[in-house]
Image (cartoon, rainbow, N blue to C red; front, side, top):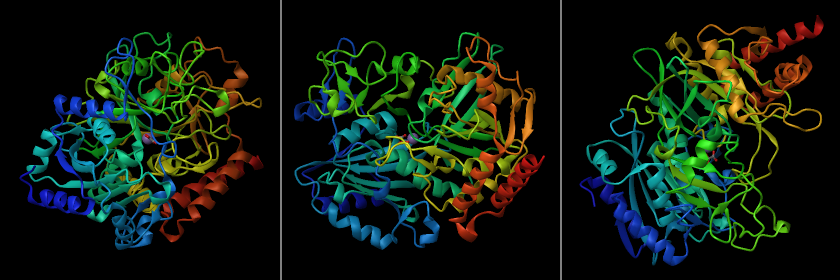
Amino acid sequence: MTKNAELAAWVDQVAQLTKPARIHWCDGTDAENDAIIAQMLDSGDLIRLNEKTHPNCFLHRSDPQDVARVEHLTFVCTREQEDAGPNNNWLAPEEGHAKVDPLFEGCMRGRTMYVVPYLMGPYGSPYARAGVEITDSPYVVVNMRIMARIGQRALEHIEAGNSIVRGLHSTGDLDPERRFIMHFPDELMIKSIGSGYGGNALLGKKCHALRIASAQARTEGWLAEHMLILGVESPAGETRYIAAAFPSACGKTNLAMLVPPAEFDGWKVWTVGDDIAWMHLADDGQLWAINPEAGFFGVAPGTSLKTNPNCMNTLGRNAIYTNVAVTPDLQPWWEGMDGDKPAELIDWQGRPHDPANGPAAHPNARFTVAASQCPSFSPQGDAPAGVPISAIVFGGRRSTVAPLVFEALDWSHGVFAGAAMASETTAAATGKVGQVRRDPMAMKPFCGYNFADYWQHWLGFGPKSGKLPRIFHVNWFRKDDNGRFMWPGFGDNMRVLEWVLERCAGRAEAVKTPIGYVPEAGALNLDGLDLDRKTVQDLLSIDPRVWHEEIDQIEAYFATYGERLPQALRDQAARIKAALEDQLAA
Ligand code: OXD
Ligand code: MN
């Protein structure tokens, strides 16, 4: 229960609507967690994994129709449609409520209604924000406990008079026809029904920390972004921080936990966050970032000791796995894991694995694990003030067009580069995989208001400080004519991060091109890499013809935002095109 009358009244009102058998206020203690896990083991909602190899680890198998975010069923309900923008599905707030409220009627009959007070951001941080999620899913409770700071301390923060985001969630009947994820930014309210999947159901994550928070950040003058945060420590012991935005399932977790290659003796990468950054301009003129989350909800397939040893060393204990395969002795398994594929596996749906049924683990299978367990977790990971950001990196999955790395000419051009981001789609959302779509700042599924206003908000930071981070764009996913990746990626991405930070320090050499600064031949440290000159050249090349076409496409995309599009972005496109035309004419 709570001393906060408004919160108590809302909980009452939800209980009257949803008719649960009982109400449980979560205190976040170990004892509570143990009891919920025990009950989920009983009901079959969780399966205990091999205690010897994976102590305190559990497997959850979701409904096969409920395995990813559902962008087509996700709505932003602002008074005016224009305020949600062409980037969001929209309903007027009263229509949004009218669509979902009937689905909540009696939906918790026979179930426990959990009330989960949570804090996004470190305890004691002026930037942390609270929420309360009401849910009938014990899976959500045990995952929220890892992903956010839940329970008594969060409730105390709320009872001290801080505002909250209210999130109502029910798995309903899991019918995709009765599934909606509704956001009401003006009411600081989320209503999610019909799905138990992470991004649709763990409301602190995408719904609160990105969609609602981005709208709050706009009015309050900060940034809520789909970005990892990492620190790079040099052999001299100096640590500088980078925030980087990539679309879902493009390697954010791997980059955040990068282990530098052998040639980078004495360098170390520290993980602050792997998915979300809240960034504020501080009195010193620098952009400081906190990770609002406390855990990682990462994609399992492709994670291995080779691609992400820190992650593998995080995952072996106290983790919840969703939709992975298991060996006969109940060890988790997924495609891309180290070693040979075991002869026998149970697939993500609990069937003996038959390759004819597809991969053994679902391509969007996940792990949930505390960030503090990660060997590279930053000593500043819980710092209330956050960390100062030296560089912002945008990146997409492009098999063609985008070079390995370029630096924007200035802040406005950097905002353009972010706004123009495109990427091939992945399994993190339902729908076709591998289609190129515009995904500005990797926020396409997550920006809680009109992108045109969002870009204007970003542009507005430019004149505010001379100490803003420099902005870069990277592409680890360029392919050659035979369809092979040209860049080794993973730990070797350190080579690009080093150039990025050297540029920030005013040291590394670059060539100015119409689309930005690219590394001069020899400016990237490629020692020990087996890459021929031609491949390096191709990786850094900018084809003026291809880019002219790319800018045409960017302009066509921008045009869908009409008059609201900031003039500065039109000007950037025109400037780049003119420079490319000069090159083509020369
Ligand atoms: C995620 C996503 O789960 O972006 O982080 O889909
Ligand atoms: Mn994400």
